[in-house]
Image (tube, rainbow, N blue to C red; front, side):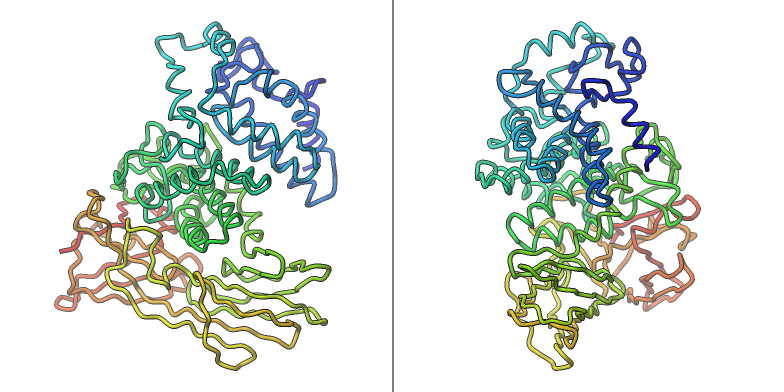
Length: 551
């Protein structure tokens, strides 16, 4: 890290400017950015890149206490703030991200000018009339006017078609959109402004009710890496970029922190175990950029490859995985005053500050293979807290909020709750088991069990690509059929009600993984093996399908 940081610091220009693509060769920058700073903001990544730098700098500082990278970020942010804003350059980045980074810089430095600049970039979308930027770009445009439509890049593609407060639909590039919505949610949380609330809720509903895949992936249209029309969710050509899955998790987590509504963490969990986790191989050395829900084993859906790739010319997805995974512990719990929210079930030991004391909580679980979760405490002195343990959406008979997907049959489920080996009735309020405030210490044990079963999923009739098809889930995991397990292929398989289903844990496949075995009751030679969607494309290339024909 020190070597990398030294190189970054050495590349920074004296006034704080940092965009090596331009600095190295301003006459022939690799993306055509040219020698003039702050031009082509709609397409180039001048501001996007430093937004990631700010996030990295804050993460490094918080982890190590060392300031070298943070000082680089602050120096650059000061330059950007001196250039952009009211009565200055009123351009906005085409690819949002700097807004998130500026908020993180504000939180660690307390410098309000960073927060103000983030809000400026959010509010300037849909209001950008900076003709000087447009004219300068036309002069330096490497493609020529016939090959580059500035209005397109300034419109819905970059969520720049109208002010955010007036928007009601998710449009354009999915990653840009969710970074944009995340930054706006940050602003709302910190400043208390309500100006974005209606827009953010309507956009969220537009995604979750009409434009999200079963795996939690978003972005149906390959050409724009973005959102298509409502209910148009093609499985084989689904783009569902890894970065978009991560961005949607970021946004849902921020919405939860703002509103404490369980629905956001339900969506977060679905993405985490499915649409995100599929993106990296078990060995960790090959990746999926798109994450489709169907493959014929021939179409080169993954940036010119049918299957996983070691790298991409645009390497945002592999490094975004590296960005997200180390931060995963921070999503397990949340705290508001003396309320502790348990949102994810992942084995851990954590220290949660409540007033002037620390609640030392441990979580033990084999989730997602079973629903048993055990909590105990290490603090010697009793600490008072109210615990709110999320009841997963799948356990509440909700595939996702809205009616885009539903379980073929609802199941009546009761949460098993024990406190200090005594069975108690689980008090469920707004999707959380609420254990009222009490003093917790090393003598206390909480045990919760969410019974798991195999579930069949059906789609809203408006979703034509899934007409006559079903999918299978077990707990939070979406399953798929892969040719590696089913040599006769999977795209032409038809499942009927005559098939029985059994869950089986295979200790030898991928060092341990749960499978679903489908068997025709009348003809036992008709069998199908399903594996978790996240585990596909780790063996030989072949057919794969999440949605199976059902008759």
